[in-house]
Length: 447
Image 1 (cartoon, rainbow, N blue to C red):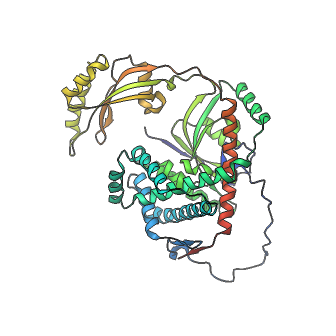
Image 2: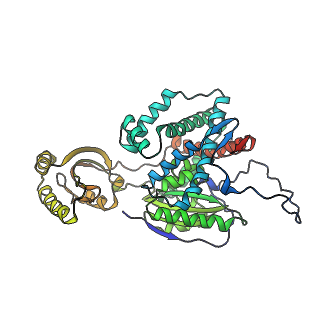
Image 3: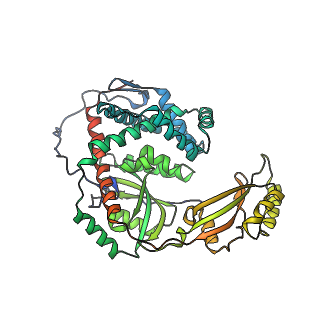
């Protein structure tokens, strides 16, 4: 399904609004003393600033080298996530952000080692095996060959994995034990959840860019460019990981499920007016947010889209060079034969007749299917098939419904669930401050 894009930029910087920690970028660093910078009003620059256009994308971080090759390989992953499409004018901006990310990863690994926390190669390899299957649908060896053909390598992914594992363990030792959430806080939140039962919850994605009155125009222009790239097929998740300044960047900007009262007024107003898969740019405390509406649901109520399906998929791929006319004939026959299916027991015979591949899929939630298929699956009788779904490039497939289990009766978050969520929010906040301090203390030489 194509996303809908709408740009609603405001020409003045938004005032900082109070909000809960649900959207991490808006949590003020109130625990850190703020000092006023002593900048003479009549001063002038006494030397020319360095030209960013002549800086090479390499650095030495506390004596550890980040090479241009590492930046190139990470950039290749970004290009891959954007279906190989990345305008030339965007490359320099991405390289700069990638270098920043690599510096942060280096600092995280160094700090973990300084605290005698080490992630072994075996642990990284085990994690990477899951990534290879989930992200690339390939074995480790196949993924290595595939990434090499695209100008990247598994080494850059493993470096990112090592940094994430090291940082998480460091936070578990040095931050989590000192996070306190009282029973009264949890009970207050659970009471609010009970009062809001039946109201709408929103699952949102966010790319947060901080801005000041001085750089606001530049930041807003950057936001427009990112929107344009996503509109042209770019990956929201990839852009969030590289550009978002919120702690949710590590999970592709996913804010999870939030209610309107958990958001700043500007974001709440925008989210309440958005349609699914729509993305808008709105003022946020201290900057601007690119907000993506992923899904909606009712608080503590049963949603039919949480029904769990047992499916059998029949798929046919078109050979390269297949014309639309030829494909149309195949689709017509495919549809005619699959509509005759009466029960999953006959699906295999139909697949043999059509030369189609068969895959059994269990445990699939209706809400995880593409939008056009969701209502069809809710209405489809057991044992029958959907209409053909797909494209000339991706091939066509039908899904035979073998079973559909209604969702369990909705229940609110438990006491422990709320406690864990509050702890995670506070850990994320402390993590941002921790990393900020590491950046301030680091010795970084740019080549």
